[in-house]
Length: 342
Ligand SMILES: NC(=O)c1ccc[n+]([C@@H]2O[C@H](COP(=O)([O-])OP(=O)(O)OC[C@H]3O[C@@H](n4cnc5c(N)ncnc54)[C@H](O)[C@@H]3O)[C@@H](O)[C@H]2O)c1
Ligand SMILES: O=C(O)C[C@H](O)C(=O)O
Image (cartoon, rainbow, N blue to C red; front, side, top):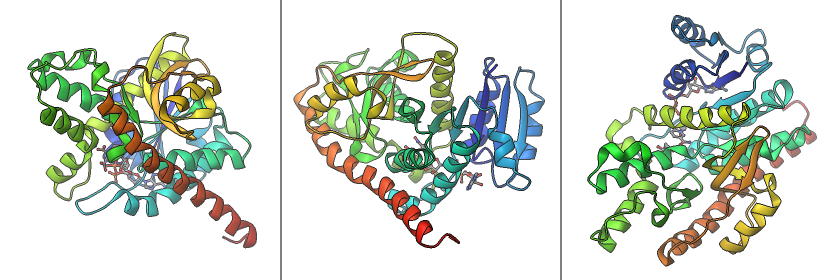
């Protein structure tokens, strides 16, 4: 029996993600929560002949509590997406509060659930969830994941394209490490399961890295004001959630990149920090999943000089992003303590 919950289930990502989760035969209960439209989304999905019993709830009458109660895995795509001209900094101003509130709900009603954060900016929203959980005494670093799978999916697709073998895309595995925005996204193309042809020029390689780092911009531009990636994100979110569920059910040896608290595996984190030349509270790298969540944080292994430069550029940006999330929550709590009416 697995209960999965989607917070922000009526949105551009939330709806197709809920559809894909409804088609996952391991999921027996699917709880959908949003501030709008979830009863309709749930009614629609409930007619699909798969095991999950679907329920859609709204905020009134303890909707969040009822949705979260009994959850094994909670996926959060709630929050505003980018449009042309809107930066991650702009998103933070709105999404930080949404994520803090939802994390408070999870801390109260599903403190043991695995939590998968999609809401942007992931590099800051994951630290927000961690701080809220710490405040409530329920933080388990092994159970919190920033979803960076879309970067991995993009890398697989683009590498297959360059290799002239688009049908190979599903089997192309490229570790993408760091975080989930711009220069913090570091694809380790030298470790691709399907190496790039030696004929690929340095310029073409740099362009490929840039395309993976700024793949989100490509979609925002093409959607022309209608938001950011939703369908590919739903696919990526369902992929990662599927892996977490397989691990939860006892499958061993599942490895995938995710942005996780380094406290989840202090030994692994130490080796990784030595490679990075910095200790970060959160970082995306390959992690092994197990019944309790993160089992092992993998180190980077052999990387090229060019990749090493990309890591160097990512680290300070990540440090700033993480601090932004942590500071936001600490200042909010401080203000609430001074003025309990807030
Ligand atoms: N991690 C990634 O790789 C990745 C990829 C794409 C988009 N995103 C991010 O995902 C988020 C959602 O994107 P979208 O395109 O689905 O946006 P959207 O506006 O289409 O949907 C967001 C949904 O969240 C809901 N919502 C808002 N406040 C809420 C609250 N307090 N509780 C519950 N639900 C609430 C809205 O009602 C809406 O239905 C954005 O922040 C976007 O930047 C992340
Ligand atoms: O770029 C965005 O704003 C959305 C998302 O993070 C993406 O990578 O597509």
